[in-house]
Amino acid sequence: MKQDTVLKVNNFNASFEKNGQIRPILENINFSLTNLSNLTIIGESGSGKSLLCKSILALIPEKCLISGEIVLSTNGETKNILNIKKRQLTRIRGKEIGMLFQNPVASLNPVRSCGKQISDALSEKYVTKSSKRLRVLELLSLVGFDDPNSIINKFAHDLSGGMAQKVSLAIALAGDPKILIADEPTSSLDIQAGIEILDLLHKIKTESKNFAIINVSHDIGQSKIYADDILVLYNGHILEYGKKEQVLSSPNHPYTEALLKCENSFYNGQKVFTIPGKLSYNDKQFLGCVFAPRCKYVKNLCRVENPNKTKTDFGFYNCHFPVEKHLVADK
Ligand code: SF4
View 1 (tube, helix red, strand yellow):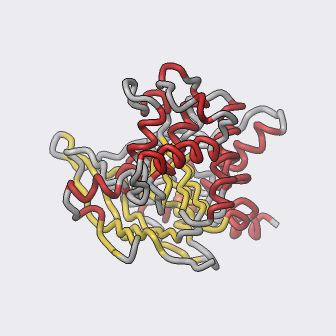
View 2 (cartoon, helix red, strand yellow; view 1 turned 60 degrees about the vertical axis):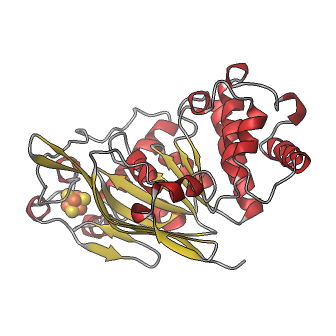
């Protein structure tokens, strides 16, 4: 299938001003997606994942200072989302970019039926009442409802969390989006419902092959099953980016290595490994590596100089002393 670039994030920065100090939230973010991309963004709470997703939808908080570009290329048009008018944004949100939120029940309109909410989001090619109804039923069936007719007149309060997330997925797909952003879509669901939603997303994406997915998670284990590419975000910085096979089997960045160790120690039933320390916020621009306070490989250079990007075959990492070097030194 033809591969076209649909999104390019170029040197994107976001920060807030507090007591006269600039507090960076996202720094120098660069990545791109094609219509075939299946990207998982991994990061712990406070890493900037949600702000990054909102920025792609131009849902940027009022007092947030931004720079850089977020360029969307769809339907033969290329536009920087950060520069376009509000009127155009309403077309982009829900039509060109679909979104699944963390809390599906709260994201649905409580006074509008599920069928009407899906119908509201349909692309313009569905004009007549009957074609709209047919497409709504198709979408409900696509997201796993065996009896779509029984869902069409239900309201958010009639649904379980898993059912509400399926309806939200139907809404997100209704505009035939070119990008679907799933911002921790399983965080408010029980394990079974969460797995069902991720399986469903993966199945629809694999069969459709016509839109990019950004799945946001704090669980690197999810990316083992569902991602093609992985982007590791920490304290507003991309620390590593690349193909799943490479990132998971031989991570370059010590933070990625530590996340994998946390994941594996949990599943082996051993004492759970945790990364020492916690993510700290810097009111001042920090000169050295952002992960230095928690990195087991830290050296003097790391505390005074932010590492430059090192390219790999399919991605990059930002570290002066990547994991492989330590493995060689340890032999
Ligand atoms: S640059 Fe230094 S502190 Fe930062 S991750 Fe690499 S080894 Fe650790």
